[in-house]
Length: 328
Image (tube, rainbow, N blue to C red; front, side, top):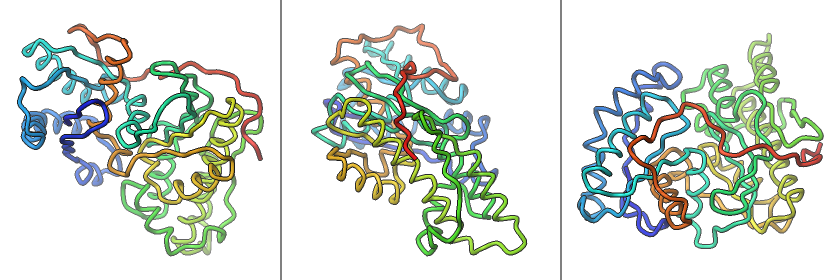
């Protein structure tokens, strides 16, 4: 739960993390996630209002993510949001989760604006978008198999590292040599799409070989392979899309320091400003949902009624063809 003013100023942002509990199983367990949402939502709501120094009557609208995601967890949030909106006679705004990751940049950067090319990279998504205006997005490319964050989690498990895999691999990679293990890059020439399944298979073979290299070297080499592809394809897509004035980076994997470093260097070389949120706004949070709801209303995109439904899977934008932005 978060309270955000004017779409850009966070008054409070409360995250009730379940990570330690899910780590026991090596990933998110939907039933546990849903139950913890039910148990925590009232407390989180009260804490967010208290920390913001506001009351229910100070609210102007209620935003909630209703898609895509785990249905049980979405149901808890949407039900609570509907109750608040109905009781307080406030506008209710359903928000697409991936769109909200994009708007995390609007909270952080006063110069965040359209047009832009954005990379959303997380445990469930690796998508490239051309953002033309509020609500006007074109999908340039996406993963054909594993998302980058999913590949981090799976490869971390192969290496015997903790869950979540992204931070664990990043930590291990700090003492490793990113050139020590020759791992493949799936360039998919002629398309801005991504693929990480082959890289995952290559890591498995290295780990299970007769004389595997140190885990730190495997982690560093894996991280470098993922980052190389993400950076190259994003900058190439920005050029192909008509050189928008900025590149946005968002999603949980956007907290990775090596990705930020290499993306910044590539954007500097291409003359493209790069914007990304602080790590706390890269991972899932309510502040980005609230900000997105604000900009929905400001852009005249209207509000929802109490028939707002939850949706497990829904693309944010339709595909557009961009010729040969992949590079090799």
